[in-house]
Image (tube, rainbow over the protein chains, first blue to last red):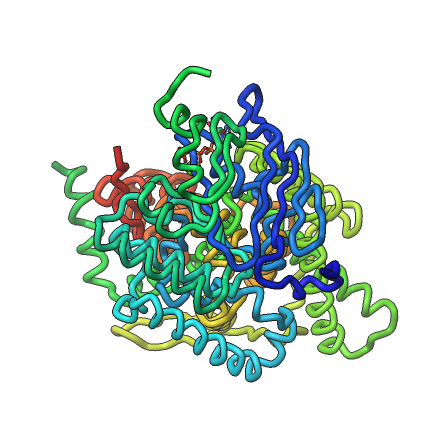
Length: 267
Length: 327
Ligand SMILES: Nc1ncnc2c1ncn2[C@@H]1O[C@H](COP(=O)(O)OP(=O)(O)OP(=O)(O)O)[C@@H](O)[C@H]1O
Ligand SMILES: [Mg+2]
């Protein structure tokens, strides 16, 4: 196997992202302690653990919201100590949030179009000087966005300000906005939390479809064990900021440390 | 009884009996309101995108006007003999200066203070105010200057129209101010709703972290809003100074915009515009019809009074949605 010289050459099954020895603390609270794991191209990688285990913090480090105190992230063969959210997005990392973060005053369409920001590469002044080509560009991006809207079965809410939508649909729009970025790595933080059974099944289907049809690599935080077992290829388990298990779903399920962590057995 | 009559009936009787005077007062109120609206707009642009209450908005108006007049004088001195040419060259250069100011503010003030509490950023804009006052005095001197109205082809004179059996005066400069302000607001509205940058601006106003996650650069957005409100300040400065002159005293008009913000909300652009017009008209009506009753000095607090009375009936402001905290 040759080393990837250019980022796009990572084949399915190769390591897409590797977190090495990541530590992060807030004042006295150690959110993450020496966590290492990797995500392979094309897989669905679940991150699980009890409340406060550090799952969201891990995603925040990966997409640059938090700077790790120690450790590095290697993405597509490029190793970094620090990365800013803007850069993470440019490198092809998209995400959703545990507590939905949408542009509430904007329509579904505009939320997804905002996801295209980085794909619209023309400069500000070009945009002002030559409105014509800029409009042409809008049309192309609009087509892509409409595809995603159809895929997520939300054409009826295209023009609705998303702040008015029910929670389940908001989560779906948020997924749509992340997909509009055409990411290489998609980070989903509890995409099914607070949903009813039917909405959960829909969401599972979208996640599987995104993974299968677009080949998007997915890191998924989820509390529902059934969902995790069904969807994921590999699972990493965090507890009190440390990695306590890592492997195939049914292997992890039988791991004594994991069972103890979920039952709240004292360390 | 007499006092009640004077407060609640007599002014309306006067309005009805001399509609030409009423119309004149309304028009002057509207014109003043347009300028209030512009200043409030400058505040709102910055507050929406960055959550910063920009105390320096007033001084930016003065700074822009001073720069324009100063550059014009400089260009004339170095031999640009055509006054109109010099004026428009100075205008273009002032726009460049405002862009430079926006970039400098982002690099030197906002970026180092990112993630600090809002009150720190507010204090920083205090600092910015005094830096701009100092710079302005250092470069252009402290004495009042005359706005280059003619050179910019801004009209003078007035139309006296015969309406309701009397004469109502419409100053040409006031009409021009209203038209230019409307054009600018319309331009901004199109920019915000139709362009990629406009969408990014709205996105940042709604959620910083979501905006970051889709790769919008906050730094770029901040430069753009400060530049936009710098341009608004420039237009405000030209229009305001066209009727008085360019001096540092102008900066207190920023305080006049505060009631507009109370009324219209800190984040609503339509609120700033409608609020500005309401305050402008309300102020002139109050001054003219109720002023004599209460003695002088009414103009210094009337705007606040109007805003507060309004809030009694509509606590969420003009266009705000009712905020019900989820508990
Ligand atoms: N910005 C922050 N400031 C202070 N402490 C934080 C911050 N973010 C996370 N923490 C702390 O870090 C620890 C891990 O939090 P994190 O949100 O990553 O957990 P989680 O595994 O996502 O939990 P949950 O399942 O409840 O979402 C917690 O103790 C939390 O209080
Ligand atoms: Mg979490």
